[in-house]
Amino acid sequence: MIIRKIADIIGSEQEVVTTNWTSRRMLLKSDGMGYSFHETIIFSGTETLIWYQNHLEAVYCIEGEGEVELIPEGTCHPIKPGTMYALDKHDKHYLRAKTQMRLICVFNPPLTGREVHDDKGIYALED
Ligand code: 9YT
Image 1 (cartoon, protein in one colour):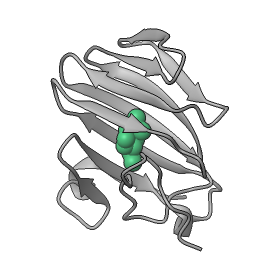
Image 2: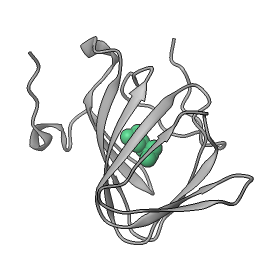
Image 3: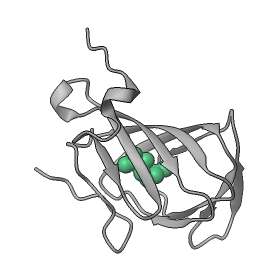
């Protein structure tokens, strides 16, 4: 069994901080679960271009408000506590945070640890 506490992840190698968000990566590829599991904080007022061409991601909002806009369709979906979205088709989108948002995120294949978006919003596959 693996037991981890968010307080031990914050500020460690398993937290990745960017301009728009911070990602506390609680389970990674090396843990052997077949997925990675993160708590992500999206900073208030930010807009992030995301296009996970190499990963599937499910996102569950537990705090804050924002929206997802699909590209190029322009369809917008409000995100608030209790809403989950799953990027089952490698959907390109903008994630906008009206307030700070706390999201629980699961990635398949699992992240290895230090991934950040490239200029197209993609996480590279590290192997
Ligand atoms: C919702 C989303 O994908 N935000 C970007 C960060 C990502 N969740 C991560 O690496 O934890």
